[in-house]
Length: 234
Ligand SMILES: *Cc1c(COP(=O)(O)O)cnc(C)c1O
Image 1 (cartoon, rainbow, N blue to C red):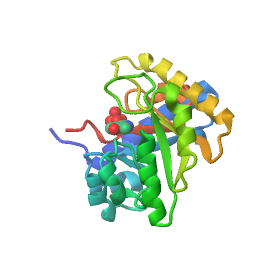
Image 2: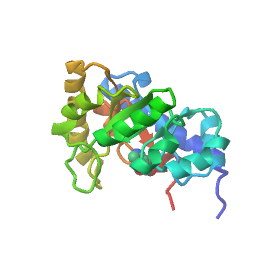
Image 3: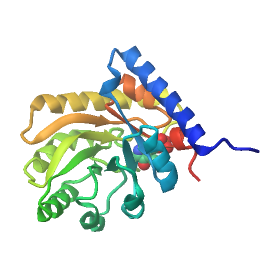
Image 4: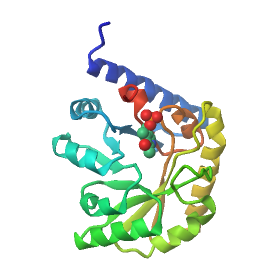
């Protein structure tokens, strides 16, 4: 079977994703500019990532530090986030090399990122990952612990919290994710209203290929999309 050239397939997928995000914004009475699209590039080779960047994807997300650092020298200009579970022994290598670490799931990890950032004379933007479904198999801070954890992180000089990130429990039906997205948005707003010093609540990162339209309807400001853009991962 002849496959379409990868850039044509990418262009089509991107167009469809854009249309879906716009439609979801419209249904929710939101502006399209309120939602950032991230291309999730784990397992995707550099050439295809660069095609996506050249088509207008200005933000990429990688899960693994090693994989990211291998690709990084060849990437076209774009913003880069780490979105996967970060081992503490990888912090030294990644500090200063990314625009944001979205998957901060403990005070200890935040403290390490802060320490390594300060050694390099910089401040790293982070999101705190929330385990919104209290799912045993997922990392992230329990919803009830999120505010106390943020207060502890707020005193660290080398990190700046920009918001929250979540992955809801896996389900076949994207409507099942709606209540988790809605809970997450409420938590985000409650914390934002507390106006904690040094905690900026501007990003609510939620929604992936299977459920990003629902996430946008429920208030996501950043959707992380891999397979709907690049095709199924091997
Ligand atoms: C892989 C991954 C995504 C994207 O998943 P898709 O279902 O392929 O869109 C989003 N967020 C995180 C944290 C991921 O690991």
